[in-house]
Length: 242
Length: 242
Image 1 (cartoon, chains in turn cyan, brown):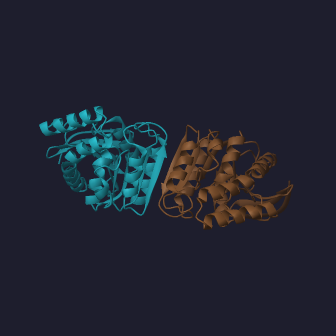
Image 2 (cartoon, each protein chain N blue to C red):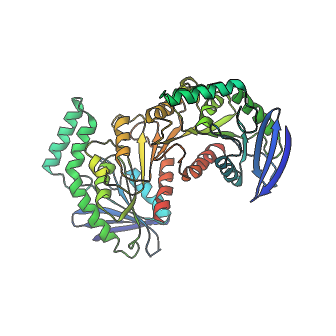
Image 3 (cartoon, rainbow over the protein chains, first blue to last red):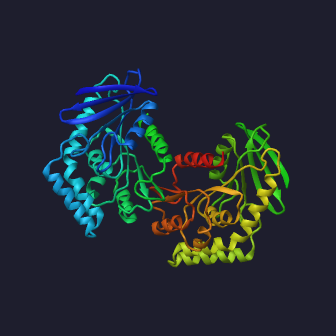
């Protein structure tokens, strides 16, 4: 793990790093070494590790005492795009343009990335927890939309993750892995989401095996999750990780 | 309005009262006169103003600085039962026993009580806000199950109510009044509720005209709302009333 830059503002230290070919960012409270809970933030499709919603959420959580890490998903952000991914995305767009179920089209794209993404996150988790300012504390995962599509396979596979904030995605391609998610889950839906029909989002919530899971639904489009849900997710994570 | 008893514990004053034939309870923080936000608590079917869930919620809210009032719904608690109501309840039970849609059966019972209940609440609201320790501050309503069935007509009719916690009920008999509810709403559903099928609960959430409304769904039966939802409802009410 190689740190490439470090800055600090408003009590939060932001460090860019690479681990093998994975570019990432770590946010921690300034000058407070010691073990702390860690939150993994998964970004949305076409976005990257420093998308505005990721950075604002990360700084909010770090200010509350969490360590927070975000990485570029495969074929996103500062990572090279492979030809196969270009083909998968073109297929997805063509499918959506021709009226194919968007859930099916998106699931194909997520399925193409999930294996690599899960391996990346597990490697980053191990390395980040070796740092003095993070340590081996409880771990949570937050990701919606593509961050949910790549997050469910991760949470299903990774026993170190003890709580997850997921959502803005339907059930296609995820039912089996959702049935292996047993940690407490906060699941977000937008009631007027054109990318995720209501029944598909509800079916994914339903498919999660977690005995403790709460669905939060708000009006509005895919990108219009109200800001109070970030505060609410923070309280959910604090309840389960601290 | 006639007060019949007053006790205080843990910083909260509890006063029983009657207004005309309506028996009620008022909870306020001890020894702190002045205008404060007021929460109206509507109890469930077959329950009453001092059901354990009502009292614990009321004391919690009063400890946070709210004034809280609960009254017995018509034909409930310390109020006389009329013959007509006995007939309506017998019909409801017979309908449910014979496999009738329970939403339709329950809606008939609520419809029988709603007119009286709305008038009771409006009279109590006016009188309670005349008290020095309450005053004319912002008002919220909390009620699930029958408390929702009687609450939606109240919130639709009463412009003094500025936010509401509702839920655990389906859409039957309520669609028109829900379409006249425009204040912020927190709506609770239980995902394995045998009394309220999922589609009926979702349809009632959907029918609310409020631009700001959030649905919270948890696993479990009608009566199994997790305790963290009381804390969450308190934050929702604080956000909109203070």
